[in-house]
Every structure is written in structure tokens, then in C-alpha cells.
Image (spheres, rainbow, N blue to C red):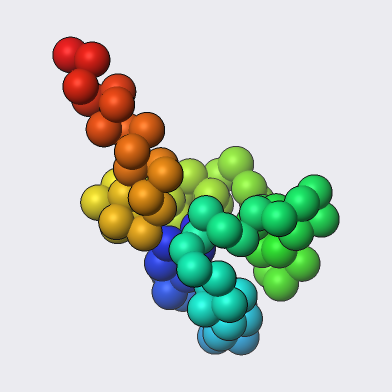
Length: 89
């Protein structure tokens, strides 16, 4: 979700949500560095900012809107994992 927080604009009509998510994203080297513990996991941070956020349904829809290309570009460890899977075929 933190690969492109701007995508929350499509699903939640609240610019403050996007602003707060961008602030969090900009505090870290990459989205993968945001998960520093149980209470600071990305989904918990999002739910604290956006009470209407449903991790399963909204998370899936927003991730689809962000797209795999962007997520891979922003998350190098995830991209490496995908590359390993791709090399198996």
C-alpha cells in the first residue's frame, strides 16, 4: 500500500488520508522498511489513519490499482523474491 499511497485517493474521498500515508512513506527508505513491529505494521498504520479501511477488500483493490510493476520497483526484496520464482520456470 505504501508503494503508491496516492492510490488511496481513488477509494477514500479524504485528502488527509493520502497526506498522512505519504508522510509515513517518506520517513522510510522503502515501503519494506515500514514494518517495524506488530503495532507499526503497514496495515495497522493505515487503519489508524483511515478507519474505513478494510485490509482484505480495500487492500486487494488498492494493490491492483498500484500494480505489480510499481510494487516491484518500490520493494526490492519483494522484487528479488519474484525474480527467483520467475527463474524457476
